[in-house]
Image (cartoon, rainbow over all chains, first blue to last red; front, side, top):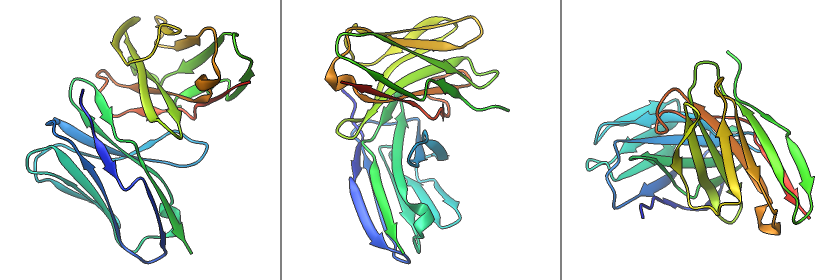
Length: 108
Length: 113
């Protein structure tokens, strides 16, 4: 069974702090997707990383795909209350393998 | 382009009943996937349909079933409801492959009493 371990499960920090969310697996993925879900809505894609070692930036969010394409990280710089939500990673193999999610709360 | 729509948004049922949820994908998307989301288990994949055929299936009992119509619209059915079936049921559409970007609907919140 393929697993994608996501950590931490929960994170509550003050506005302006930095944070990193990790997704790790023993399996190799062809790509990895990051989504954000806000209350009452479905997840929305933030970014897809495809190449080992790839780094993508989306404003204050930096996404990295591991060299071996088994792990990925999401780093948020100077977090803002608008970043609050559930962050999900999903690795693409024959199916999408989903992490358990990181519930992020940014306090003003 | 209209997004993924799901109906109904909220549903309350009692144990033993059955329920049917509906999903209309983004126009042109041929793959429709269904997920169950609960606080304890996270996002769990139920099944995926493509061209009216179930192409992938998660690890759920046979009480959970689905179908896809020729216009790509999809329904999922849960029979003999249990308390543990209370969850947010999300539908997502993608262009062709299940591993393509998933475009999610807002979900149907099912409560089983």
